[in-house]
Image 1 (cartoon, rainbow, N blue to C red):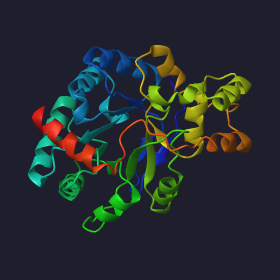
Image 2 (cartoon, helix red, strand yellow):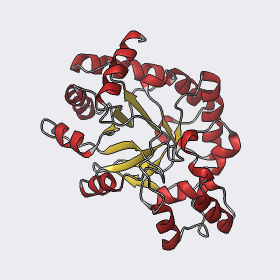
Image 3 (cartoon, rainbow, N blue to C red):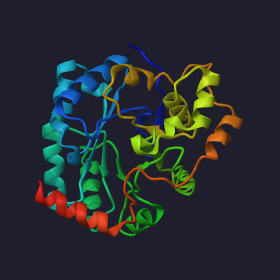
Length: 289
C-alpha cells in the first residue's frame, strides 16, 4: 500500500520517515503481526531497542515480509548496563546480528545513565565507518546534551523523548530546534495511564474532523515537526496511525492552541533526571542480561 508519509532531514542529510512503528513491550508473536501489518500499510520505519528483547523478532518479521532493506529505516538503542567503548561495539554487533542487517539507520543511547560519553565515542567511530547512518540520544534533557558535547565531535542528530499533549516539553523542543536536533516522540499518545485520548478537548476536535482522538494527537505532533513512533498491536490502529496526511485533515491554529493548553507535565515514563531510576535500571539490566 502506497502512502505519502513525509521524511524529515537530519543534520547530516539522512532522511527519516516522520511516522514509524514502535515495538516496546511486544512479544515475538505481536512483533511478527505488527511489523507485517505496518509494512503492508506503508510504514518504512521500525523502532526497537536491545532492552525490548525483540530485535531478533523484528529482524525475522522484516525478512519474512521480503522487503528490500534499502527501503527501510531501522532504529535500535543501547541500554544502561553497557557503558564502556568495547562493550558498545560488541552490543552494536549483537544488535546487527539479531536484526539480520549489516548496518543501522539510527543508533541511540537509551537513557543518560552515567558514562554515556563512552557510548558516544564508540558510536561516532561506527558512524565514521559507515555502519550507522545516523546517531542520536533518547531521554536526554538539554543539560545532558550539553554534557555530551564537552567531549563529542559529532552532535546528536535526534533526541527521542517522551512527548504528548500532557507532556509537551516545549523548552526542550525549542532547544532541539535551535541546535538542529530532530525531536522524536515516544509514547506520542500518552500511554494508558494518562488517558490523553479521553481528554474532552481532544475528543471534541476529533468529532469536528470526524477522526479518531489518536489521529488528532498524532496530527498535532506532525504539525510540531516531530517524528513519531506510535506503538500498536492492532491492525486497524496501525493503519489509522499513518492516515494523517490527507490534504483536508489539518489542525487549525486555534485547535493547536487548544491542545497546547493541555500541557500538565504528566509523565508516563521515568524522569531522565531520576538518578535512582538510572542506577536501578543499570543494575536490573546487568542482572537480567
